[in-house]
Image (cartoon, rainbow, N blue to C red; front, side, top):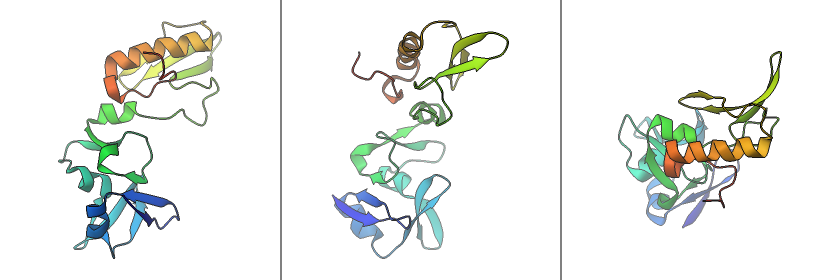
Length: 152
């Protein structure tokens, strides 16, 4: 494993071969990904590391775009990639996929990439988050980012 600096100043983790392959080329952010320009074409580094074909996306298992070790990148569909997300900064519940809504009545709601599931209305947030985790594991499998990962 080797470390390079991104144009933003963050450390980028790369496997030895990729480090030497990319040497001399600056690595910069572009559209939420790290890219390098090779032969005049901008290329997503994670896509290059994992040899990901068009129509699929690279997914950083640890959600850190600066960790481009081959062991941290997997091929995913758009839906799977969207499932591996962190809690939104605007989220008031403190849990991934559980939001607080006031629209005449107060309730907690779970939201998924594939639509909205709101069967956990008026449950305490931890119970809603646990129910969301169960549904996320069923729907997204290993790609699901869970509120309670230690619970299987």
